[in-house]
Image (cartoon, rainbow, N blue to C red; front, side, top):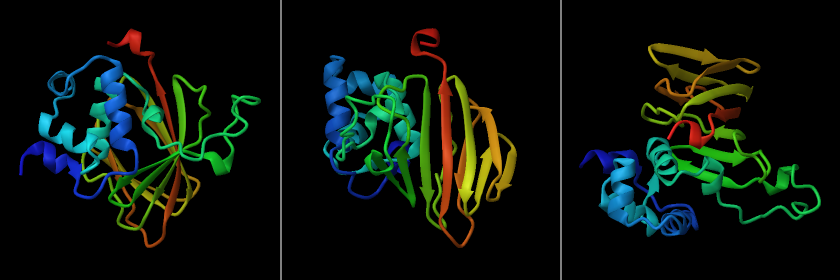
Length: 202
């Protein structure tokens, strides 16, 4: 199995995710081959993602959003919508959080409103034994995590840190990192990403 396929989660992709990726690609006038060059992913794995045959891992997802030039929030499934979006564009109600199932026991819920740009707030729900399974490197900026329930083992560069309920960490998003839930119960983590505007780091 090649490296790209190892980065993909071997399960059906979340509803509409593939269509969302394809729509962004076409909107930017990119062929699959051109997006492959931008992301470092193979044409084959990109085609599988767009056809909802497989879900991207966190590492592949990061490559996709950087290659497409969109924030992670743009790739979330927003089936529930935000009925108050027009009246209160800066509000995201609990019941209207878009979700992105990354597989391997990791569910991301978008907490930031649709108006968010350089600061994104998410809720990570990590099942016991759930993990990224790989090292992720983000775009220029910072990330922070606050454990609201359970515990999370996070690796940042050479450091392996166990965060218990109430613990928090903040780090350079470009530092290789990964995490897993080594505990016996579900972990809920507030995950914050602050990134340098795209025009400053492209």
